Length: 342
Length: 270
Image (cartoon, rainbow over all chains, first blue to last red; front, side):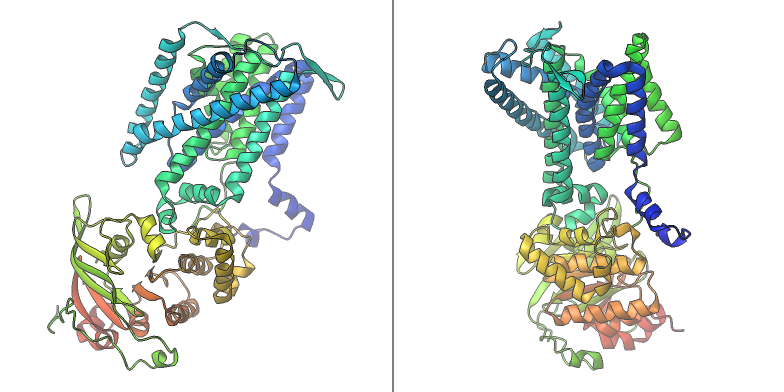
């Protein structure tokens, strides 16, 4: 709708401000500041770190939903497989079992681990799409949803058979005791690393989707599949690329999960998946920036509930957020409000 | 309803429809219609169990403007979708530029020279005008696309003013210009236009039809679907009248416009 013609005259700066649509960002900033004051710097950094991991997983949910309107319930388990892949690469391929002191070696090992894990997980994502979802592209919507739950079980059981049901230790390449001083705060190096890697990946993704030809193809396929085909877009290929990217990011999240927590279990994906899904809904499903913001909020909510001595309620708090979102802002923080008409 | 004998639609020896007495034509300096570039033979297309096209035969020659007219549900849009590969016929064949494209996917048809501006404009509402046009050039290199965008802006100066705006915020007429511009961006040999005048003001309709002529004068063959039969027959060389999935009449545009039955049924005359 051309709302601008309906609006009354306003000073130019108000108009500019409204066009920037800073509301959701200010909201997240507000949540962060309040949270910082309530739980203190240490837990705040913890929330930011966990939030970064949720954000990476949430992006995969939101991208897949955006392009084929499927809640890919197997996505949390893809993240879990990422954590195990990274563990396997580190211990069995690169022969690591603990912190690496030498920075260049550390950087090299991390780079190789991220590269292998992300590529393998990207391939896993496209394989899942090709064999589980593509055959159901024209089926009723319940069919792929149930298939996704089936894929989730397959991934969990496969990892359980391969690595056993108990938690498995993963090498913490960055020593958990390594600290640095950031603006007067004592912060773990691994926290900084996690946040920096996650945010960099999100920025790279955002640039890819908004600036490149393939990114445009992804967005137009999400908006109108038939029209995209008429432009020469091979939608099967575009959807496969979307799954590749989403799953590769879940793989990266799996890598940092292992590095940060030091142990992983085959059930990891279920809880994390639900929370990341909540983050995606909170941010406005289909919106990549929204998923990232939602991830950080969910991180804050969970850590705050835990830090305030109500840990058992930490999980519940996340789903309270989901319910509140659905009640009061079903489109999410950055849900589409304009320009749907075409 | 046809008292007049139906001219054969599949006669290969039919001469090109030249020298039609339409005055607007002679000034545009169009190339003479050439070989058949698009050929539908006994095409049957279904939506599930609904038999939408019941044996369509249709030819389009290079350089022509051909129009499909008919009431709602006659199969005009379905015919275009079958040509561009969004739908595939259950029986019959579609040939384009000498190749059998009956089963070819839509994105390959776009690559090979079928441009389709679909019914209802279908622009990408959350992409900017420029991005929408870039999507039209999806299959080609960056520099060529930039030049083509300039070309579209020169046809539709209005779109240049709106270049950075999201497609969904444009007015109906601007969206239609964008939809046509985007289809031109695919550099089609044959351009399929589905109801380009729908929902536009009379002045804009005039503009759109002028532009359709210009695009055609530039060498693009056009297959035009219109409710606005009078206007369509004015710009077209030939026309087909569709009814319930069949071609019931095929003739030169001027002959159709003069046909009493056509006038009664589609031109609003009593």
